[in-house]
Image (cartoon, rainbow, N blue to C red):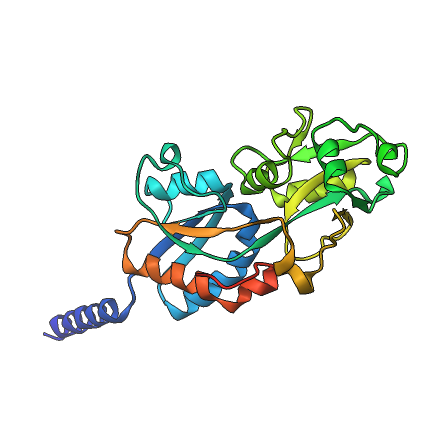
Length: 262
């Protein structure tokens, strides 16, 4: 009789525990690497306010983010390129803009160059100018670094900077902002571009066409990507809550994402 009472008590306790314990759920975000620092430091607040939920982050680039969310392999996609039907298989996605993220042109500090005209920078990137000496720098060969076709930064540079020309086919492809910065920092004569709202260390941020980047006036910088969060309309409400949380968090400006989300 005592044994039966103990079994009943244990059953009751287990039932109560399962009733009050939140259902564990894992949410995933994939896409543009340029926003990972902001997302990594912000999702913790969402997890604390939503016990039982965890959020994981993966890069892969803007196109990968759109592909993954449209196919249901990620809950949220991050992209600074608008969706195309060939990436999303025609799936409609809802969007939450994050703001503007400056695209900076960076060079190895040993080039001796700090400022270029737009025409000079274009000739550097498309390979017509092969030595920094030709644009007032040291006699060092130019090594161009670029991003993969899935990169939103490359899309903006092609559209807004190159004037119809293409970045040299000899450019070294770097898969992320971090890889680009490391490559430019460590390679004499290197030049590339990164999405950053802060001044990166160990490289020269080039002035372009008389404009000089300052984090205090980051919203005025003319070259920028527009990262956004994408989600399937039929996604669970918790996913939409996550998107609203990330899209409206004031932390954005700390990571150089300027302007208010719309």
